[in-house]
Image 1 (cartoon, rainbow over the protein chains, first blue to last red):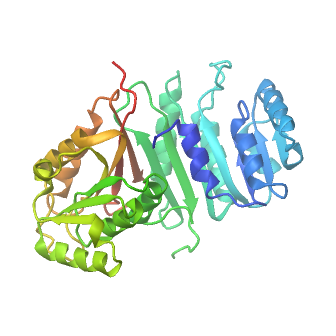
Image 2: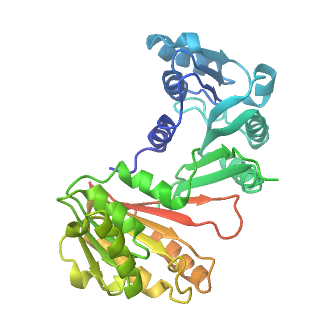
Image 3: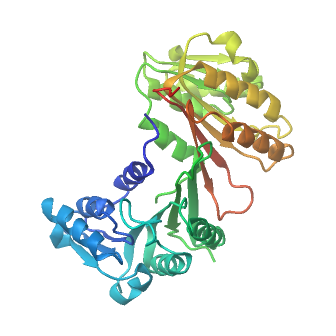
Length: 191
Length: 191
């Protein structure tokens, strides 16, 4: 099978990209699957910094991470990803975003347009040349369409000389199929 | 670098998918790069059937293919891809389409909405369950927008229970960035 779940597809894409020793941000830890994936991908000399506003999510994520013995390379931060620049000062190799709400969690606690855009802007600003950010947008919930539009608008208008933005979607699916954005900071900035 | 030219990206995607011994169609041979790529990917027991309405294109493609010594597994057909069902009766594992005109060739000889849709429909009909079709759409030329709209409309309306259609585009690029469609026939048809 060529197509898979969007999460699996993102992991496949990133697996061929991430190098040992790199620094990645999981901007939306949620149940911790991406955090664990990143921790395993960056290896023992790498670093993963994860954010979530829900303590319960971080606790679950920590369990997963400890179970695989990779907790030494992970920092979990109980704060909004829009404040990531308060915690991260060094350039990062990449970041992952899952926009929406925590699966199986409280569906009223959602990422929102304003904080998502702040987090995206700050992540892009911290991104090394050649670094990439993946954003999966789920938008079938209340407030989801608004965030989707804001993110889409923002990404469409990023200067193409500095950043490449790719977008993948399932165009013949109904019921709000997730959208994947891939953001790459270009290595040779044209002036 | 994560992003590459769209052609390279398609080759990367297909490389991890194509198995030795498979049957692929190059619906738009053009300069033969995809034909050669497919011939090398399907191996000595595989088969590639290529179509082009321009004899010059087929001649150039044949040169490339012979140079690499893979001509035994390739059939080049000088006819419109909309007639592919006259030449192919067996199920196929996949197909590649490049919509637009032959690079460095006569830019008035273009693929058109009507024949492209026929070729796509027939390819999908011949596709094995699990098989995939890639379509790169170039539309910056006269008549290009019309074909793009027709293809987009057709693919958006394919029954999602039988076929998955993914679409990739560079959303912050100007000057008609190419669009990639990936079409997969589902293995387990839901009724």
